Length: 142
Image (cartoon, rainbow, N blue to C red; front, top):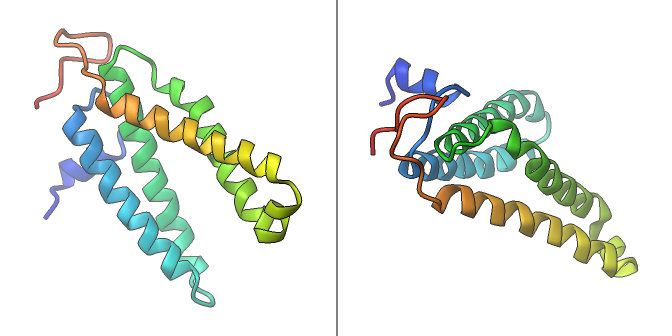
């Protein structure tokens, strides 16, 4: 069971996150997000799913920011990559199958945008952080 301190840090944008913490939080939030999308498909369930979806996204944004801090970068660096990924995903969802067939170039561009976001996540999660303290604090415990 998660401790209250652990839950508090889950939503914190301060400090640094190790690669292990990053991947654990990311995996958990992806699984929760998939589950929430299934729940949200039920009639009337959006009322419950939307606040939980926001919490899942907040946890992802926070751990990405802390991971960027470990790399010596501001958490704000995630905004362009996240915007690109979200724009690609939303546009693909709103196009539907007939829209994809009608404009395959746009569909390819949107898939490319999502691929760039995925690449950003992989690089942030795989790059070794600094062993030295930086302006965001001491190195995270492994």
